[in-house]
Length: 357
Image 1 (cartoon, rainbow, N blue to C red):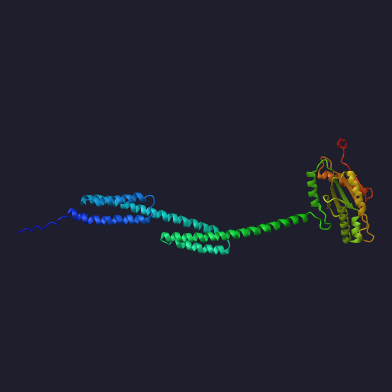
Image 2 (image 1 turned 60 degrees about the horizontal axis):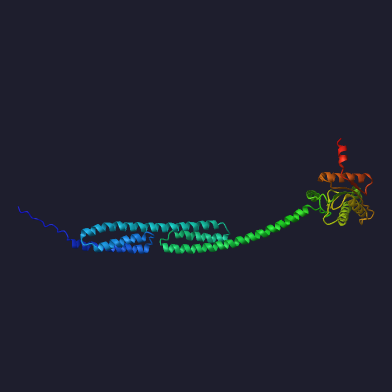
């Protein structure tokens, strides 16, 4: 039996292996360095690129297959590190752009509560932002996102202008409302029939005067009551009665100073609060007023008269005590025959002591 010896395949010589491996490795290294040029790896770029350059130089200097194989292993590690660096950089860029898109989207949401025109424009912007999620080219994504930011800035500027106009309109309306409120408050303090202060206005003026009263400056209070006013209304009618009340208010108002308070505090009752007059000075002024009121009012046969009681502010007085003395003096005037002025001084301390013994 003849045994045939098959020839073994001869292993390639080192020179042949070197020739087959080196060009492939060099192409890989050139490809990775080109990728680095366009990948914008960042701070890792220089170190990794230097490592790839060193591997390329070592590969060029290798003289046999063993050396090339050893260098090839380091080349693999360097290329893996480069690929990981590029992937991290791309992920960071994608994350940065997604974050920016989220900020812009929040801006859209915050602006979306405005008028219909702005809301429509923002709705279109929202649609475009949603479309950006499908853009794979980062450069194109940045360009479109920049355009969208410019659009949103323009919308925000228009909203600011609209807001300023709205604020201005509201400010004008508020000013008008305040003016109307002032008028309403003033009208609420005025008696519509006689055009002098009403009871509310008189009480407010009295409280203010007593709160700021100067002890060195006298303050007099007078109360007027129309004599037999019911009979006037019964005989001549209410229109005549209204004319009497207007006549009395006009006479009192014309006889005092501008800052004195004249008020109709009841149906046929009037009050006068006069600063700077002592009780004796006020008494003379009040008598002249009572005489003036008694003159004819233009209705045939109609005689008008008033009774008046007056008091002067004294230390320790309140509105109640001051009005109480004037009201007591008015009762005295009625009892003495009407159509006259009666005053009542504040009680002396000895009188107060006698009263409470």
